[in-house]
Length: 329
Figure 1 (cartoon, one colour):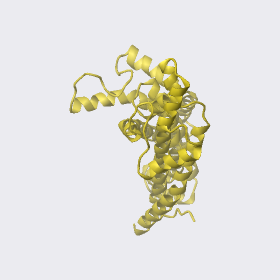
Figure 2: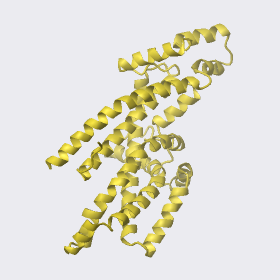
Figure 3: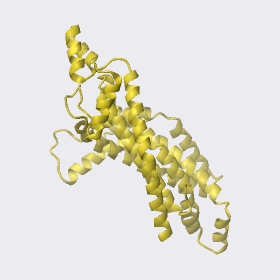
Figure 4: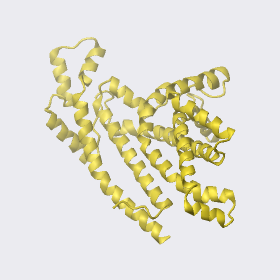
């Protein structure tokens, strides 16, 4: 047990030190990428107003600090970050931290639900496929995984809305809660869960296919190793061999891929949240792009990068817990 805790501590220290230059690089790179994009918030405000004079445009850019040289804007932005501030949004005239904080919980709830659903179903289906390799359940599930892999998430979401919301009327079409229902307690929780089902399924479909195929191949590879033959020769129950010896070691590559796809989940949240009108960071990022509100977009990118880094740190800790021999020298 002490060896496992030593592995966890060493992994946590290493990943924490690696995260510092990564965050700095992300901040600087995202800032210059935003500067390379055409237009700014002043252009959008002028277009929405219908017309604007050159003096009005100059005043708007001066008010938001858009007329400063690029390096001065970068210095001002880094100064805000040093004071744990992401600046103010020209579009909403609110602190960016307040805007992100209001929607971060919804996005995390959607992502954790989708990832948990994808991992649970993927590992379960992959285990069944590996245990019955070559038989008809393996072939049927392989075809199903191929279909899920090749189906776009937005199309799956739209078809789910048509079937479960329009035709059957079982689930709501969008949003995170029923507006004006006045629910509380368990009724409110059940209402949130009903709104969460369809976007979670739509986001998880693609990853169920990935995790099931990866679990199947990893378990087949592990099952050929000597320690598995030794466990079988000792007379252990086949279910014990599968769960404690084969599946546990097969989870290492699966968890690695899950950490790598965490950032992809964040990117896919933009589409899923738009389809289901889910009030999360994805929709906020889309609105920020349309409004050229690059201050909000920088904050969302920084927050997303931090979430991806934390997810990969969690994966490293999981690897050290599953196998204390894992070390990165």
